[in-house]
Structures are given as C-alpha cells and as structure tokens.
Image 1 (tube, rainbow, N blue to C red):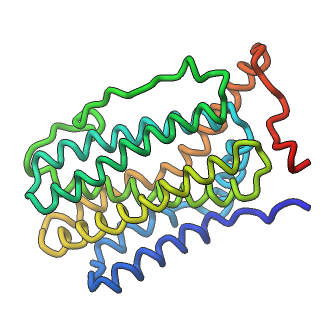
Image 2: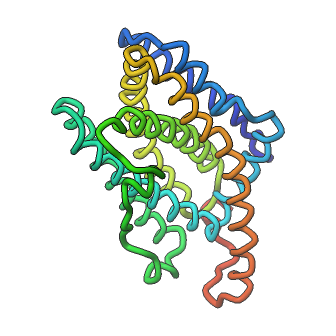
Amino acid sequence: MSPPPLDIGALAEQAWDTLRQRLTAAGIALQPAYIEAITPVWRALPQNAFAALAFANALMINDRFVLYRRLMDLAREEACGAALLGWAIDHSGPSLAETLADHRKDELRHSRMYLSACDSVLPERAGDRIRDFEVSAEEEFGQPLDRDSVAPLMASIHVGELRNWINLSIYLSLLSQSNCIYAEHLHSVIKTVENDESHHVFYTSAFVNKWLMEENCGDESFRNIARSYAGCWWNDVARINRWAATERDFKAASPCHVPDHRDPRQD
C-alpha cells in the first residue's frame, strides 16, 4: 500500500500554530505587521504547488544522489548562517550576543552533521566532498553591514529559520515512510537539527516582534525581507528537478552507482 500523500500546507500551518502558541504562552504579543508579513511565506503557493513540492521532496529523499546534493546544500546554508551570526555577535549587546553565540555553535554543528550524513548516503563520494565552507557575512546578506543592520539581519535569519523548520518537518515525514537503507540514520540527524531549529525560530521571532513594536520603520523592512523568501518554495522544486536531471547523467556513467539502495531488511 502506498503511503498517504504528504500535505505540506498542513505541515506549514501546524508549524505556525506551534510557534504562535509558544509565543503567546511566553507573553509575547504578535504584531500585526509580523502576521501580515510571515503568512505569505507559506500561503503564497496554491495547493498544486505544494503537491509539486511534496513530489519533488519525495523524489529527493529516495534518490541518494539528489539527496547528497541537498545535504551538501544544507551544510553550506548552516555555515552561512554561522557567518551571519558571527557578525551579529560582534555588533550586539551582551545579553543578545550570548544567545547568538549558542545559536552559532548550533549552526556549525549542524553543518558538520549534514556533511557527515553525506557519507552515509553516498559513501563512494566521501573522499571527494568538501570538508568546510568559507563564507562572508556581507556576501551572504547581499549588502554592506553596519551597526544598524542587526535588526534586519535578525529578521532575515528568523524567516530563513522558519522556512528551514518547515522543510525539516517535510523531510522527517518523508523519511519516516522511506525504506532506504540510510533513512533511519538520516531521520535521527534531521530530528536533532529540527529540535534546535524550533528554539531558533522561537527566540528570533520574539526578537522580531519586539523590533516591530519599537521601530517605526520596521514594518516595511520586515515585509520586504519576508517577501524575498516567499518564492523559495518554487526554487526548491526547480532545484531538486535540476539535480535529478544532472545526477541521472552522472549515474549512467558512474561505475560506483548502486541501483538498489533500499534496506534489504524491509524487503
């Protein structure tokens, strides 16, 4: 029997409800500008687009060559996040800097975890993959940074963390249904990261809502930041399909390709 289709829209709504409940329980008032800006990050897509995303992610989870590419991508994203947080630490007050330092440690650890997971998914490429990333905070943020950039940078980190949190929920759901030999190990890795990300989403959301409450110019800035992420779901679909096409050519020519990567214990 085939597993039930993945309802990504429902997963996104569940993440939003969880975040809202945690913030409310902590006495943090959700600003109208925050709700207005964040909602389109996952509601901007029609239902058929969520179906396309579910199909693309299912393809990725069950194709170890494509999954390898995504894990490498995730490792780099975490390293980039650490670079941005490193800059923010140097330009923040002591109380925030301490929280940011813990967050940065998590990002670096996640990057290493994803790189290590690459070896379990595609061991024949273990000797070829990159071991570390060199990234620039300004290059990653896309514009020069100064002391007034801390709040917009934190807002950008928050939206990125929220989107990543939803993505990881998607991966966990798909891995729990997969019979690939690496599924159990990778589920454990991603579950660890997902737990950390939920904390990152919470504290950065609290920061953003406080910023929006105190800063007159914050509303439009945050809307622009959130809007820049809304199209990323389409980019995910395109990227996975592009990788699948590229890796199909690689597999056809590769003597290392092992066609059957399912767990024989489940056959």
